[in-house]
Amino acid sequence: MINSSSFFIDLSYFFAAALFIYGLRRMSSPISARSGIWVAAAGMLLAIAASFAHPNVTSNHWLILIAMLIGGALSFIHAKRVELSEMPQMIALYNGLGGGAAATIAAVELLRAAEHGPSERILGVAGALIGCIAFSGSLLAFAKLSGWVKFGRWLGNRQTAYVAIMASVLLLGFLLSFSNTAHPVLLLLFFLLCLLFGIVMTLPIAAADMPVLISLYNAGAGLAVGFEGYVLGNPAMMVAGTLVCAAGVLLTRLMAQAVNRRLSEILYSGFGIPHEISEATMQYGHVNEVDAFDAAVTMAYAEEVLIVPGYGMAVAQAQHKVQELTQLLEERGVNVQFAIHPVAGRMPGHMNVLLAEAGVSYEKIRDLSDINGEMSKIDVSLIIGANDIVNLAARSDQKSPLHGMPILNVDESKSVIVLKRVDGKGYAGIDNPLLQHEKTRVHFGDAKQSVQEIISAIKSLD
Image (cartoon, rainbow, N blue to C red; front, top):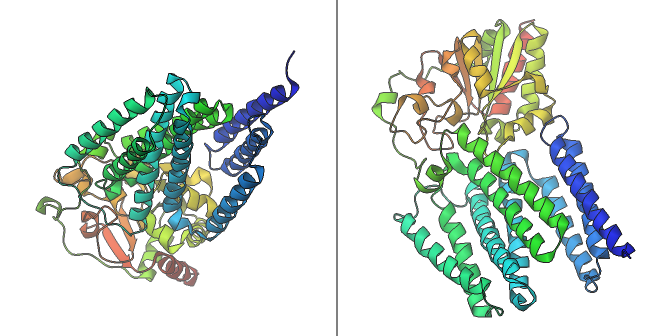
C-alpha cells in the first residue's frame, strides 16, 4: 500500500521541478523573464513546503523558519537597495552563498559519514569541494568588482600553487570518501584548502574575463547543490541544481566563445593582465572632442544610428535618457538600433536588463554577429560608456591582452561619437585606439548628463 504522505511529498517535488524547468524556459527571453522568475519562485516555495512535510524533518521547524525569515529579509532589503550598475557584484555574491550553502550541507553529512554509503560520501566530498570553490571564488569576485581588491597578477607561480593545493585536496577527499568516520580536524583542513583553492583560482583572473568566471561559479554552485541533493535524497535539490549547472555551463561556453578564448586560457594563462599598449595601435592623432550640439545635429540628420551601451551607461543610470533619445530620433525619422556585445557590462546580459528596464523594444537590439556585417550602412555609432567591446587593439595589436576577442566594428560606420566620463582606460585596463581614430569624436562627461544635453540640443532644432 502506498503511503499517502510520501506520495504527496513526491508529487510536490515533481511539480516543483516542472515549475523550475518552465520558469527557466521563460527566463531565456527578456520579454518573459520576469514571469519566469515568479514561476521558478513558486516552484521553490512548493519544494520548501514539501520539505517541511517530509517525515525526516521532525524537529527545529522554528529555527528553520527564523533562519528563512532573517535570510529572506536581508536579501529583500539588499535587492531593493542595490543599483543596477552593481548587479554583477550582487550576482557574484549570491552565487557564492549558494555554493557555501551546499558546502555546509556537505560538512554536516560528512560528519555523519557512517550513515552514508561510498557513493554518497564521494558525491558529498565532490559537492564540498565545488561548493567551497564557488563560495570563496565568488566572494573574491564580488570584492574585485566592488573595487576592494585590485585586478592583476598576485601569484607569480600560481600553477605550482594550483597543483600543490589540488593534490592536497584530492588526497584528503580520498580519505574522507572511503572512511566511515570523518575526523573533525581532517575535515576542517579539507574545507580550508578547498576555500583557499577558490581564492588562488580567482586572484589572477583579469577584469575582462570576470563575466565568464562568474558564470562558471554559478554552474559550480548548481552542481554542488545537485550532488548534495543526491546525498540527502532530495529530488527538488537534484533537479534545481542540475538545471542551474546546465544553464551555467552553457552560458560559460557562450561567454568564452564571445571573447574567443578557451576556458583553460582564461583560468591559467593570465589573459587580460594590464600592460602598456604597443606603438602599433597608436597610429592615429589626438582625440577630437565634440560638444553636445554638434553631436545632436549629426544624429538628428542621420538615417541610421547605432547605440552601443557599456558599463558607463549602467554607472550613470542613463538607460532611461537613452530611451528618450531613441524616441526623439525616431520621431524625426531616424532608424535607431542597439548593438549588444555578449560581454558588455560586467555580467552576461547586463545591458539587456538595463535596456529592458528602460522600455527599449527587444526588436531594436542586435547582437554582434548580426550587426557587424551591416556597419558600413550605419551613419552614426553612438558609444555610451563602452570601451573594451569596441577596442581596436583587439584586432590590430597582437601583444594586447584583448587580441583575438571579437569586437563591434564601429570604426566601419560612417562616423563615431563616444560619450566617455574621463580620458582613461577601460575596465580591462587597455588603451583604446578608437578614441584617436579619424572618424571618432569624443564628448567627455557623465553619460546621463551628456545624453540629456544631446536631447535638449535636438529639441532646440525644431
